Image (tube, rainbow, N blue to C red; front, top):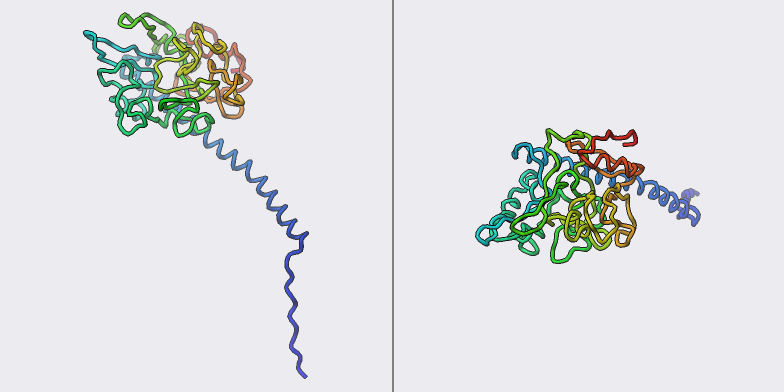
Length: 314
């Protein structure tokens, strides 16, 4: 009699086999996530560096169009017969035509407004320049800015992740006759900067929010005059007063945590990158400043006319 061969029964995974598979998957995920995070951070750091490079090119293009002069830290409003003629504006606004934001620049010069932030700009939350988000001013790694706005902002003020060197772009102060407010003038031109363009810091990272204050890109001043340090668009001013600690000569803070407490010093720059702060030099190059840089070395790089060579730890 013919007997059909019996099929072997197919067994399911045992509990031990299932646990082994789950453990292997967990290990692979554990190995993959740090790599993905590193790639993501590297891309964010590159984007941050590219923003600074773009602003470096903008500074030089501004100088080329203005007899080699650098943009002022801020420019005061102008009056004629009691009427506002030219609104006051800051360093960031001055760069707008040179970072492909000419429409915003034209809007910022609307007559009848004392300051550029209140100039009409359609399709923004407030209908004015103060709430216009400029991507070039935003570092993807900045944890204090969301959708272009500072974590602390009120009334629709757009934020920035960068700040300019006040010791370079606004160290000399004078009184503006029409208002009595202080004005600013760059210390040098591109061609005659005493310490050399490659040895002078132009801009660096500065978080959009820090200890109750932060960085609003269209704000006309910051560390150099009233409300110094609260909403500073600049850093490094030896003559400023501030409700926060006067550490204007100190190097950047590296990942201060949390940024909502006194751990974050709004009189200083901040960076979210690990061990390096993206820094634009006046020659247009971008370099990473190491977390180990001393205060003395940082200050020598920030002051454009002290005549001191940069130490070896720069």
